[in-house]
Length: 337
Image (cartoon, rainbow, N blue to C red; front, side, top):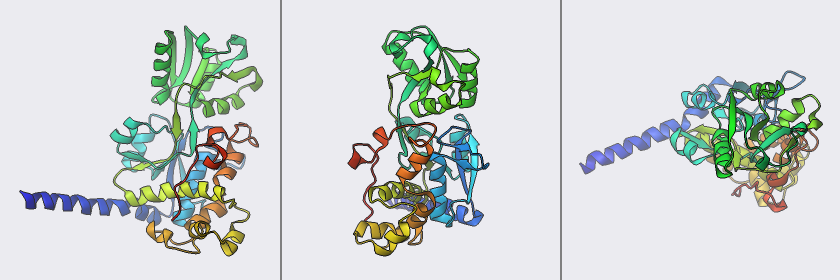
């Protein structure tokens, strides 16, 4: 019996090793990274004027492609609804999911997926017309609410209204675009979603300044990329590609100065990050320049944030809790050593 148990453990270990190399080899063989994103969310995943996908979530896809394939453009974007996203990842239709998805205990333990980190700390809020005449979520008793089906926002909304002895009428849709259209058509009094999504939706409404996000944030919504469980090599690559963006900002490495930093850096961690010292690339089954390519093509986390959702973008979102840890925020990478 003991021998049988040992054989079973060994078989699991071998399967784990085989599975762990699977996605990396598949992506290399295909020559393209299949990345699932939102069907369209300004600042996070949207098609720009040049007909190319852009956004904070898309930059995660590009970072992984730069690390693995040497070219940030070698990404096949797969737009997915909230209902479709997990099945697409589980089935192998996509290699990574980077779609404003909240990291929760149940998702992390029951769907066969792993969250590779947090690229945006968010929280659920409420978007209303100023004509509604409310200044607080506590004034929403009896309201009708447009909401995206298959999201954590449904449960958060129910919990919040129950805890405050209020009632509401949910109006559900499959996509954020449908939610916006329902709201514009007057089918509901308000929209609830992650605050970042509400700011994005507001930019798409006629007369955006006649709408406001109420002050209450009713949940924690850490958003980040996911991979399939049982693929540790791929999990590490996606996780550390995201960490490379954050560490680059911490050390002031940008897309503009990365060549200079690679040639002149004296700080040991910077040298390890940029591949001029150590073997961190080898540890990931990648070459030494994997993180250099991410920074050269995508920039650091701060650059990505600012151009996509920051004060220089139409969303005009301040860094807030998405500032680096040293600036009072929550964004934090483990050391590159």
